[in-house]
Image (cartoon, rainbow, N blue to C red; front, side, top):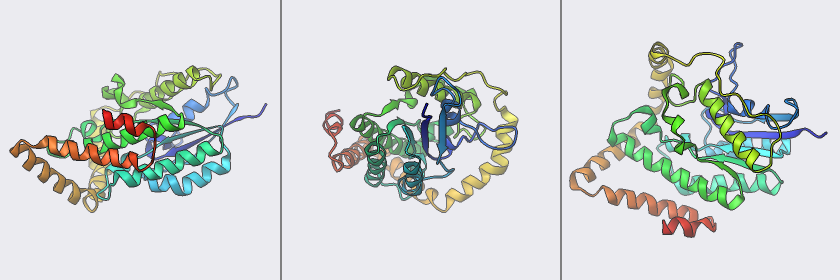
Length: 287
């Protein structure tokens, strides 16, 4: 029997950060899902192309080339969060990159697996002048992913709407990546959707973690070591732009014109989807 070939494209979420193995490597939801794609746990061949810190440009470039070489029957594309955390974020550019990735994989015959993502500002507990601009960017990204998933007939997981997303035990110490439990829940949700679509024949992944989730001490250690470095790295890129957005947010809040910012973001998203000429554009425009 021909093994089911599964290619996973994306960033650190798909690379498995937050779900460490005893040897120091990362496992993650894609590896957990792969075991349940076929009746034989060894009946699926996973090629994980994802890289920590990847942007949509990376996925549309080297990751896509690598994935197409695998000739996958199933391909997951979960990316874009890092784009929203960059000063250079442009929703139309992101939309066209994702369109090229979805289209190329579909043209080769792969079934697509996609997901929308939770708001990073809310997950990190940022103050509203910082959280709101990031929230608008994530909503724009999710609208684009929804439209593309609909257009290409992808199996799509509305991750941001699941209640477990707000459960502390579902997240690692950095609050940006799922814990082992979170990765297992993601794998289970994807498996449920794929089963409903008649695309898998294996057992669903267990949601019981092998180890306890991170406690307060682990969270404090991460912030004192790796977390500080992450903040410093972003100071040269995201922070100047985010501060500008925060000042704008405060000014509109004082003037009572926050709805103007919401409308501008919505229009930019509509223009981005319209430029792709997808049927989903009309539904978003009417929303």
